[in-house]
Image 1 (cartoon, one colour):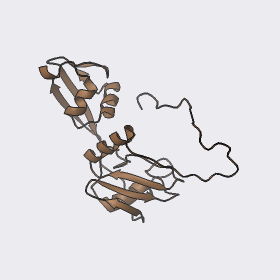
Image 2 (cartoon, helix red, strand yellow):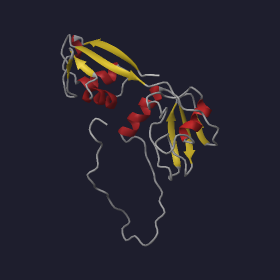
Image 3 (cartoon, rainbow, N blue to C red):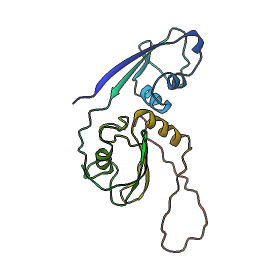
Length: 199
């Protein structure tokens, strides 16, 4: 099934003149500020029919058009894979991912993933923001890393968790086994690593 594309149009009122478009839309739509910035970069958000910048300050009577591509219908199969559930409510489920299981399908791992297991537990109650193969997935761990993973059961929870992680409101602690003698008690890794633009 092809993705469903929806268009939303917003007309700017006088009271909102001068606000940055990403901040304005983060308050007035269901999208997070990060998603809005991505949509602007990909020219999915237009001002009066023209592409804009993230820093654009909106003007009265501006017509903002948002092209929203809804996730494809989930085509993955739920699988009965034992998973240690640490916490669950109507919005999130928190699990202890064991070593050796991949979080979501990818090349070489079409099934047997954490997503397949969660689909069997949560049925249709998972956020669609992660897309076709990542329903509910807000963050991930490598295959050979065990640990706690939070999974969103609806889009509102997904956006909320993503914002908390982005704003460093979620504390992450990693434990590693090291062979040999390490002189330093602490160290900082400072490397030129960043996300590729528009990805």
